Length: 310
Image (cartoon, rainbow, N blue to C red):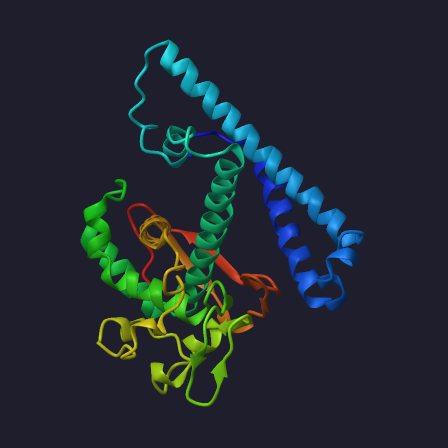
């Protein structure tokens, strides 16, 4: 977003974010907390409010620093081309049309919805790559064809050539769907094969189950990136729901894919990954998170004599 944030600020923000999510789940699990008149006097509410205050203060601090930076730049008539396209700069450009709360909400969305999910997807992908040496070898060969021995930055045209890496990333997102379930409010009657959903209710979609459904084939429970390259996809285009579907799908899906492919390509050009996904124990909360550690290690490649994966 064009603003430097200290390690301590990052730790405080992420801790507050994780705790706020945990408190939301705790309220969901304890039916008596669903009643507002009970919830507002509960310890869970107090802890959640404290976390939200930390998040708000952090966002306000970022906005204040960015506004001051823009003001100094305008005073000195400095044109910073690197900042003109960053998210926060563009958001503040529309500050006359947005309230302070709306801007802060957008900052929260950018940090929490984008960064936390994307980095966790990259983690799962690395775990799976490290668990399948043949997959890792194919990716490394593909990156070798694109970059050779160069350590240059990734360009947009490079991303298009990363076909097997993209297939691996998508298969990872299918296998470990980051948001395991989503809820939708029913505003009109919907007739299904065996029942009718009535308006005024909420419907919970278990995306983890959709991604392991038999429509993906007999090997739906197996990690196999090749399915994305061999035209073995389900006939229903909505079968892949990692970015959700419909009017409320993820608006940043294209950016997220570019971000994750760039991250993975940088890591896999420099490190060999070792992991064992079979040891993973998952916690199905708002996000699908490892509950038992990650079981992953990395080894730096030698610059002139890269390790050969056996």
